[in-house]
Amino acid sequence: MKCREIVFTAPGKAELQEKEWNEPELKRDEVFLETECTLISPGTERACLLGLAGGNSFPKRLGYSAVARVRNAGQESGFHPGERVAVYHSSHSSLLVKKAEDLVKIEDDSLPSESAVFCIIGSMGLQGMRRARPEFGESMAVLGLGLLGLFAIRCAALSGLVPLIGIDFNEKRRKLAEEFGADATFSPDDPELAATIKRLTNGSGVDIAVEVTGNPDALNTALDFTAPYGRVTLTGCSRTPTREIDFYSKVHKPGISIIGAHNMARPHHDARPGCWTMREDMALLLRLFSAGRIRPERLIRDRLRPEEAPRFFERLANGDPEILGAVFDWESRKLS
Image (cartoon, rainbow, N blue to C red; front, side, top):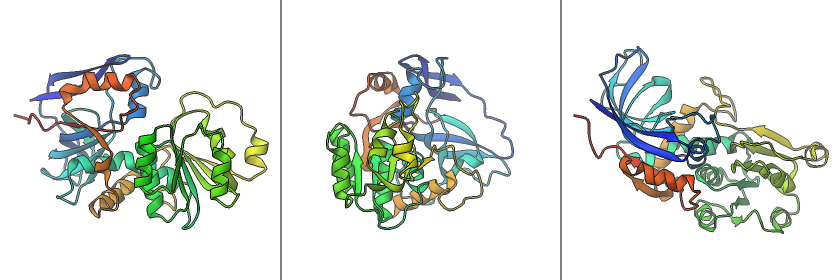
């Protein structure tokens, strides 16, 4: 059988490659999968494509969100042929072998795969909000309205946070955040940003700030409008050091908590309040998608065939601001 996969072969360059695969001999907890679709993570994949993350060694195989059908399964995997699953830490490939612990069954047969695939990246935005332990009626600002930030906004809206504020340079993303439940949105270069947010929060600032930009200077910005005793979660991946912060004035004196909320900072099995496992968050989001409480299909800007990968990743490398939700359809040419 043939396997197609998208490979980053050099800085800024992606290729669709094809190779022969034999039917894999599975371990007891492994599952052999045929991919239906994969979702691009624009920030992470651009950084890796340009050699800004994971070193400058090529080739690289990226991607971490997929929906696939089980083709075969190990005896202790808990999965069965024909089942549809969401796949964490996948790659952009038509065939995958994954451990069962990286899979969540999609229970709703009517949920489109191109919607279900968002449960992986969505759980990362949810983690940014959840780690702050929000309470109904608190205020929150989200810095960065890419996919993670928009999911943080939507999950916060469902959780009763008010006012809910979105911050991004991109006007289209700000409008989308308002559709997802933000009460107000602003550009980070607004000279009155901190003062405006404090006016919206009765002079105190937001109880929670979720930083999802990956910009090393965004923490300083967030601290300028976080209320005393508030919490800031660091959800985006800053790949260079943050400039000097006056910790006494901005953190120590107002009693602000800074919380690491990277997606890998999770329990693998036993969840605890404010800190759920990845699979639990994925399953929750799938239920919310099915209930219509989150509409991930509204985030899709590009529906792509794998053959379009070289041109698409060239756009990504060049920093096209219009890229948001981009889904590769792997079903256009089925396995023989």
